[in-house]
Structures are given as structure tokens and as C-alpha cells.
Image 1: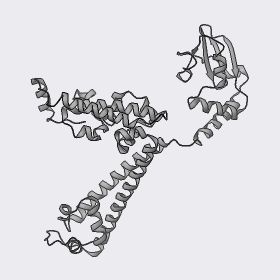
Image 2 (image 1 turned 180 degrees about the vertical axis):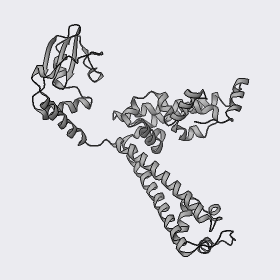
Image 3 (image 1 turned 90 degrees about the horizontal axis):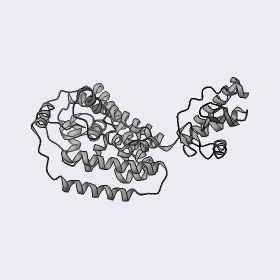
Length: 360
């Protein structure tokens, strides 16, 4: 049986058993042209030389999944093919690989790669704002502890940044309350107001980044966004490492993306396995009673995977249809399982041991 093998220096058809070269098509001895062909291969394309050679044989095996459209893939050790035997020296290989690196690094960045970094950047902003906000509450709380009960998050930071001392803030809020906090020096107050300004800027950066993520996610994955919303879709793409990789995952993996630590705990200690990862953020999951969440999570994971495959292959928009099908499935689950299932004694014991929590 013939096997199609592609090396950096040529495309070969070999006899499966003997390894004899039946036919071949050598690469041009131009490092730039070799680099271009290798770049095409890395992008998943099939070379014209491969198509030409494979077309000469009615039945042929191929040595890689990239060529699966030409024949049946199989593992074949072709390490015995030596570039020097066909007139290709190390100097050509070195120049070709350098050219390949230049070509690949200068390629346009796919939108989903920007999305991955944007989500991670958003997480960094949220972590920084939470840490600084906690510090601001502790610091300013020595002067006006009651403010944390009156204002939250961005409002809390803005009041301190714009007005400073508690007298000015209570006047701005038209409040007449006493405070058990201590007085604060002007120099200390300026420092606290500077910190509040930094926290406020982080909140503003967070909003800007969220708008950017929503815009790029809607453009890159319209079907996913129609089904799961832009924030959740973007986070799933980020966790998977890109839209193409997400589309290649099984739905069970999509269902548990973001719950890796809980899964490792389950595998290591035998604790209850997680039923969902970040898709718990979907309102139809976290608003449902606990006994329905696993089933709804499986349903949404399957639909998200279909949407991801359509988006990855630039298919037609079917987001509305997928959402309607998912909503019908959720309605069916709620009708079928309106009440919590009765638990056995062993299940009750395990639940008491775990504190009765239903973690992700």
C-alpha cells in the first residue's frame, strides 16, 4: 500500500512495507518558497504537490490528519528520509526555517486571539481593582467607617475622590449621621483621595474593556453570543485558548471549562464531581434549582459547541434557532423535574459530610 509523506524538502509516495520511494515531488531549492509552503501546511492547507501525487493512486494512506481529504490517515515513521540524499543541505533548512518564523509572526492576528488576551486583561483589572478597593475601605474606614454601608464600589471611590473628608461627603449626600471614625490629617487625606482616584480609574478601564470584549465577541462569534451572551462567550473562548480549539472540544469539556480545580479535587479525593464551569454564569443555570442545573448545563454546552463550530467555520447565522431550541429544552427539563429528587441515606451522608454545598 502507498503512503503519502510530506517533509520540508519534498512530498513523497512510499511503499508502506519497504519504504521505497515510488514517486516524489521535491521542494524548490529556494528557502523563501520552502518557507511559504511550510506556512501553508502549518495553517492546515493541503499543497498542490500533495494533491497531484495522491491523485495518481486510487487508494493511498496519508501520514497526517491535515491530509485526511486525500486518503486514510495512519502513523508512519518516515525518519529514514534524509534531506541530504535529495540535495538539500543544512544551510537551506536553516534559511527556510528563519523565513518561516518571519512569515508566521507577521501574519494578521485572528480576532479570537485578541479576545483571549482581552479577557485575561479584564481579569487582571478586576483583581487589581478589588485589591485596591479593599485597601481603600480599610484605610478610609478609620476616618469614616459608616460610608461603606451607604455607598458601594464605584460610588464609594468617587465620593472619596471628589469630596474627601466625611463632612463634605455627608453634605453631598444630604445626610445627618454621626461617625465613630477618627479625624484625619490633610496629608493623609490627600493620599487616600489619590488611592480612590486610582481605584476609580480602574473601574473606568474595566467598563472600557468590557465594551471592547462585547464588540469583538459579537463580531467573532455571533452565534455563540446570540445563545450565551457576549461576556460568557468571550470567557469560554479565552478558557479554551481560541475559537478553533473551543469548536474542537467535546461538549462535556465545554460544560466544565473553568471548573478544572474542582475536577482535580474530584479525581484526587473522590469528592463530588462538578456539574458546570463558567457556564454557571448563564442565567438559565444559576437561577434554576440545583437539581436542574446539571441537565441545563449539558443542554447549553451542546448548543454552545454547535454555535462555536458554525462561528469557527464562518457559517450562516443560526443563533436564534439554537437559542429557541435551548429554551425549549430548558422548559422541558423544568416540566420533567419540578421537584428535588429523593435522596438515599448514602447521598444524605455524603451531603452532610460536604456541608450541603453544591459547588461548581
